[in-house]
Length: 218
Image 1 (cartoon, rainbow, N blue to C red):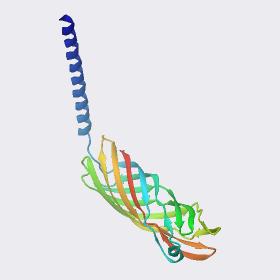
Image 2 (cartoon, one colour; image 1 turned 180 degrees about the vertical axis):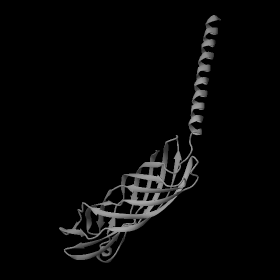
Image 3 (cartoon, rainbow, N blue to C red; image 1 turned 90 degrees about the horizontal axis):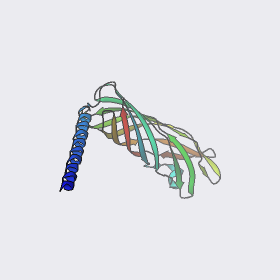
Image 4 (cartoon, rainbow, N blue to C red; image 1 turned 120 degrees about the vertical axis):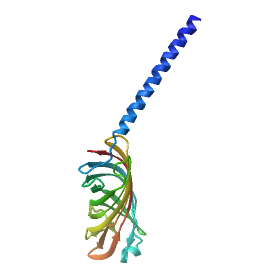
């Protein structure tokens, strides 16, 4: 009987400890969520995303006859947003990718793409935990490390491009400074190609960029 009483007392003490820990954790979580105050003018948001780049290829002239295409790529992306108003931010997106170019002659090789993009963003529900946003802006696309060739001859990239960009996404605040992010963008970019001094046509990549990531508010 005494043994059972001791075991019962120990069980009661253990249950009280577990209950106390649970209440403490709940209070801590509630305190953490209560401290979330959204975003405000002067805040800096830094996001790191994994992005999938899905080209929407259009070609002209010889490139069309060759049925030239561009493969998808998955790369990291860094972006910085400065809030100029509680609801209005300016975002700079930085990332680079390498794409393989295909044709009915086979693989033509790879080329790197660097499209720094500047967007003006409108943030909805800026004081809340879940904050959708829309953005629009401009990108400059730089093509480099060109490894394209056809029939043993190098394919030249003859220009870089400016183009529009649009964006939609959402930030979900987890703690006062940490949040998770989902984002989709459409970026317009193109270049002209030539072979042995002869123009091959224009290659428009115009990808949709889908990203998931995390961020910090400073």
